[in-house]
Structures are given as C-alpha cells and as structure tokens.
Length: 310
Image (cartoon, rainbow, N blue to C red; front, side):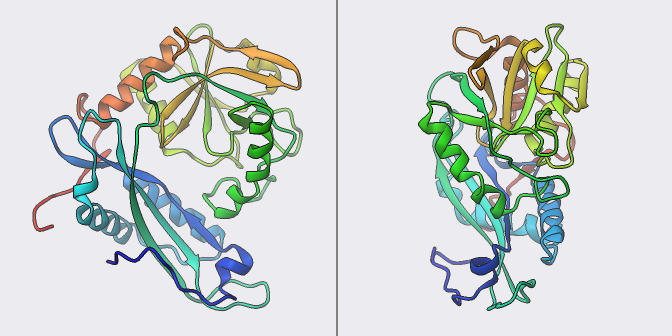
C-alpha cells in the first residue's frame, strides 16, 4: 500500500513502447443502511483476466484482485461519499508491462495496481439525454481487441471523440468495421434499445466489450421487471424503429439517448420531460435500488467491505 501516485519506469518499458496494458473500473459507495460496498467486483476480476490473456499478460487471480480492491477501499474508507450524495469512490485496477522491451514481444515483468479517487455524481439533477453521431471511424476490427478492456482501444478513440465534440455531439456510435451496417457500441458504453412494445434489445458482437452494467440491466429486465430481452445483431437500418435508447456503463448506469445523427439524418427517441424514457427509467431505478440497498440484490452482486480491522 502506498500514498505515492508516481510510478518510476524504464523508458523502454513494455507499456510505453508497445502499449501492453489493461484496466478495469468500478465504484465503492455507501448504501442506504450505511454499509460500504462494491458492485459485482468478481466480474471485473474475470474480465481483466480475459484482457490479460489476449494481451499476453499473466492473468491476475480473481481472489487476489478482490483482496486488492477490498484493501484499497478500507484504506480510503474516509473518502467514500455518504449515501444520498450521488458521489462515489472510483476504483481503477490496472496492469502493465514494466520491464525494458526493445523488439515487438511481450514484457517479462508486470505491475498490478489499484488507485482510488472520489468522483461526484454523474448527473447533477436528472439524466439529460445525450446526442450522438454515427462515426466514420472504426472502433475495433473483427478478431481484434474490441472485446477486452485494453488501453490501446481507448487511445485510438480519442481523435474520434474530439471530432464528435467539435461537431456538437456527446458521443460516437461505432458500426461494425467489416460491413458498417450493424451497431456495436460507443467509445465507452454498450447500447440498449427499447422497442415500441417494451422489448429490450442489445447488440451482440464478438468485438463489443462485455459491459458488466449491461449484463446486470439485462438480468434486471428479465427477472425483476418481466420484460422480454433479445441479445442479437442490430442493424443500423432498424434503429429508427426503436422507441428508447440508452448507453450502459459504470459511471451513469444507463444514460438516455435523445437523438442519433446519421450523416445529416436525425433519429429521435422517446424521453420523459428531457430525461429518461419510461422503460429506461424503470431499469435505472431498479438497478440503482439494488446497488444502494433499497431493493434485494441477487446473490453475490453486492460485495460488502468489512470496516473492522481497517
């Protein structure tokens, strides 16, 4: 455990020369009954193992991952915001090649670290719908690294998001690189659509990052709300027929999409008083209710941080 935020590396470190790095993101927060918890950290551990395997890095064991997260939260318990504030303690577990490497090959030494930082509420009041555009850039190639949480995936998305912001959009919608006809995801979120008869539809692709939040919302839709769910290929030409659209991720749980712009063509979605549509609101309220302890959680979803022997 250290309070030093600086990392000293050789200038030839694998992470600097060949971007051999992966990371995760999750939050610690205070529930309604005063407990400090994290949400499904075991799934973050498993996803990081998948990322490491694809990048020829050692798979950090799940139990050690969970222990590291628990220790970091305990050490920073004073910085976990109170219930009702909307703020959380953000946790970033990450791993990178640390020894000197010249020549394209995997590193031989790695560092696994976790840092924590308090973050404010994602929404100051209600969830204002975002406006996104169909990007002319590709996020991930078929058989590439789109399905893992590698730092290099985010580096290549920076130019695309800067260009989108210049044009007045909040985010990009990426299509599949092979045919450019199917919806994949944004630079940092999975899509979730709602049909006019309240069916949930989420895109399925081998190059989409498997969002833990999206998978949780799918379970909530089926088991808590009794909604029908389809995980399948979603073609861009059918997006105009959906009633609601949301972006799923750790930060906001689900952000409503107000409009998608496809090269000058506007596709609007249902929203309630400039906020969430009714089905997305149900999903948001139910999942956040589970996270905050207002609704009983499925077994294993809530990891309680024991505050004794800090």
